[in-house]
Length: 315
Image 1: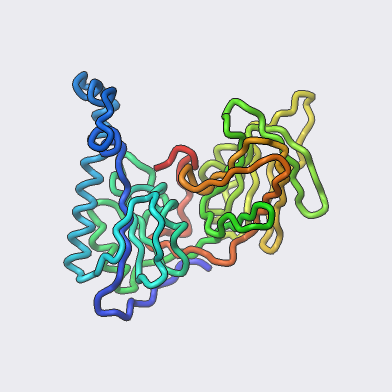
Image 2: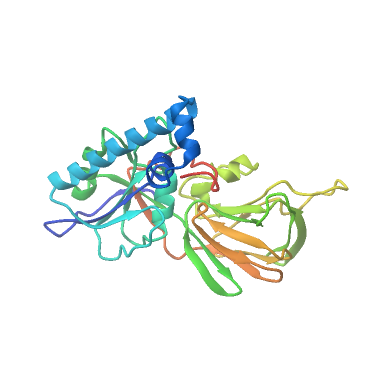
C-alpha cells in the first residue's frame, strides 16, 4: 500500500507521544562530564565543534516542536527518550525528534498509530524516514493532526528465537553476528527445502525499508520502498577455498520465511540498531518472516532512493 492521507483525529485535543534524542554533547559533556571531552573543548578540537553545533541545532528543533504542539492545542501524553519503552495504543500521533535512529527505536513501541519523524539537525544526521526537518516542523505537525500529510505504509519483519517471539516490529534490519567483531559467525541457513552452512562476519536481514542502508552497503539490492519482500545479505563471507555461497544474497517472498540455526556460542541478534537485541547461543533457531503489522510513516515519499545509515552506528 503506497501513499494515502491520514484520517483526522477525532479528539478536540489530539494526544501525542514526543520522543526526543539525547545528543552526544548532552550525554558526554553535560551528564557524564567526560574529562576527555572537556580537554578537547578546551583545545578547540574540530570534532567537538561539530558535536556542539549538532546539539544546538537539535535543541532549537525541540523548542520549535514543543511550541508548535502547544499552539495546536495538542496534549503531550508521553515524553520519552529514544531508548525508552512506552504504550502508544491510545494516541493519535507519535513524533520523533532526532534522526533515523530515533525514529527506528521509537517505532518498536508503535502499532497502528502513525509516526512522524523530524530531523532535528539535517546538516549533521541522516533523516531518510523523517517527514520534516527543523524549520518546517510546525507545518508538518499541523498537517499530520489535520490528516492532510502524506503517509506511506511500510512492511516490517517478525523474528522468533526457538519459536518464541523476539520482535514483530523490525523496520530497517536485523543483524546476526558474534559478540566480538573479530570472531567468525557460524550458522546454517534454510530457505524452503534448501540448506547451506556458512561462515562469515554475520548477516543482515530486513524489509525493503532497510535495503538502501546496511543491506546495500553489504552488496544487497535496493528494493522498492513499499515492497513486501525481505532481503538477506551475508557480510564478508569466509570462503577460503573459493567456494560460492548459494544464499549470500536472497529474497524472501511474502508468506515465506528464512530459518537460521546458530553454530556460534556467543552471538547476538540486533534489531534496528544497538538498543534492541537478544542473545543467541549454539543450536538456537531463528526464524525471519514478514510481520503481520505494518508501520505508517507520515511525510515520507515512497519514491525516495536512499535509506538510513548502518544499524550499528546510527543514532
